[in-house]
Image (tube, rainbow over all chains, first blue to last red; front, side, top):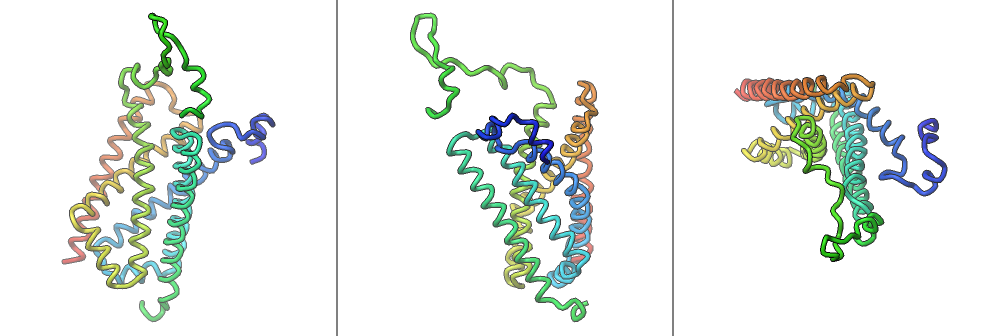
Amino acid sequence: MTRLSDMRTPLARAKGLGGLPDGAEHWTAERVSALLLAPLSLWGVTQILRLAGRDRETILAWAGRVQNAAPLGLLIALTARHAQLGLEVIASDYARGWRRVGLRLLIRLATLVFVAIGAASLARIIMTRTPEAKQ
Amino acid sequence: MASDGREAFYHGTDTEGQAIRRPMSPHLDIYRFRLSMALSIGNRMAGVASALGALLAVSWLGALAQGPRSFARAQKIATNPLGRLVFLGWGVATLYHFVAGIRHLIWDSGARFEKKEIDRDGKRSLFLTGGLSVGLVAAFVTLSRIRKG
């Protein structure tokens, strides 16, 4: 990470120049999250097909199992990260000044809401179900 | 936009000597249409659509966790024609963003940058997205029907 940030001049770094204050790390983080998301999304597609047309009980039992809940949680977290990074790039490309600041705040807020809903839902599903009882 | 420092460069005069705001450097409207430009902005829009759809998906998960009544309501919304259209749109957008994202990772490695390769891969990415969409939608609909009886 430090190697990438060294590609900017000290003055540029001090002034926070460019659309994003830490563009090089941002760029790398976007690719890393994409690389991790690729196999996870494929898994997600297979699980959507697996659950298509199933009732609530079956879906709850699915989500309550660790081997499903773990990748689902990871999928939610990485989706949040990748979406935030990507939307920030768009904001930095098309908006300037206060509008950009406002957009960035909105993106962060939306990302937090997304993660909060995902985490709370998963936690509730896992905790309200004792896997032994319902399988 | 007065706070935009670039404005300083746009002061000019026309042939009559009248002060005008000079045009910005032309970019979007002077180029002949190429597939790659549509695919590029399409990937960006697909990314935004995927993110918005993910917010809906996680809300659906919230309804699932909340209780049978919330879940029934969520399913009612998701299975009405508009809900299905949104789900389809989210799916296709995400598939395209996936395919285009893989292309970006390949470009990041320095490969497939030749003009011909870009044109060929662009068409391929469209066919791949279309094929995956049709196949997955068919699988989803068939499985749903079989399981619901």
